[in-house]
Length: 280
Image (cartoon, rainbow, N blue to C red; front, side):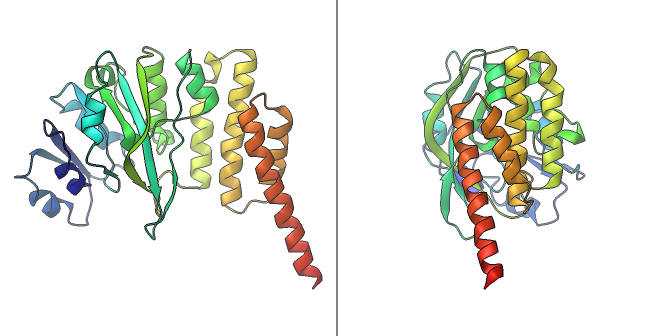
């Protein structure tokens, strides 16, 4: 992560590192980079999630813009240069990231998209399309919405909550459909599949659902069920196929219907293969 900052073609930036009570020698690593750029280091007792540490960074930022990066992600050398070209008149600029697994294999990219008005509804109904390490936001707008929520029930989805809060007061979002960085999708990441993550998705949907009406509210619920079904499938819950079937029947989104249909086919194929194995 720090090496990728050193390699940036755009050099006019400060670095704020917030250490959430790590015990892996982070402070020593930071010390080795103190002469490479204008760097400030803040240590705090472990809070259990990224929100508090990111808020420390926001509160101590001196620049007009903040570009987030998690410690296990990295930026490509042209990231800040390209983003800096489109900041005028924006509040949030976001781009794609490449996803790498534990073996270093590039297996996919993030699911960014252009938002459509009203952005708040699009984000809630269509799902989160901004990744933390691929987002740059105006410092003033971050402070205006109070930074990231430190509600522990939103751990792992607090960035999604932040974009929703901003979209309620500004639609000056700008999407760059290019990968300017990398996301490490390794074991132990907070956004990985888990029953806790399922509960947090329910929490954030319930937090904002009352601000939608009629069909939009229904579609937001279906989107939540799709995300939950994806997690259930990854966790080996066989009821996920039934959930995908219900989404296929009831969603008005063609994209969601197609995705659910593919998962239904995969589920049916897996069941048939298992039965064939049992009969041998």
